[in-house]
Image (cartoon, rainbow, N blue to C red; front, side):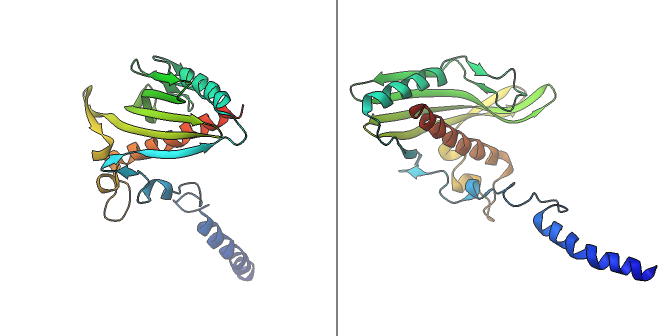
Length: 216
């Protein structure tokens, strides 16, 4: 009997060790499930002259300026419609809500410039009958030309909950930059780290939506 038990342990032990390395039995999620490097990397929140500015170029090979402009303008008018939302309520993982200040400020076909004013909720977590969230405000400048869209998101700030229904406006420069948001170990601080995560996710999502709108 003892020999059988020893044999079982001999077979199971390597499997358990492998499972632990892969995260199956450990408290840490499997590799790739909780990779925070995209959020903790230095410079993940880019700065220019002390201001938080996200810049990128969204390629649209083979597309002309007019076609790109029409599609991106249509996207912008839907995306930045004031007091609009998507999803049944905030418990829906795809829930999205603009507040009244959201709008398209300019859409000039001749110059190819589209300027959007973002004003929306970013939800951190949802519990029964409650949600943890912020309101984010920013400007999004899009420059359309043949084969591309120049993307620039700037003038970003947040309404930070102070408790008891009170909020204070915090500029991105003093809230989500490396110096303000990362501790000495290079980890996200508990208070404002979630703002940094949601900002990076928002920027990536906007670029994705613009790219998809062009290639519809």
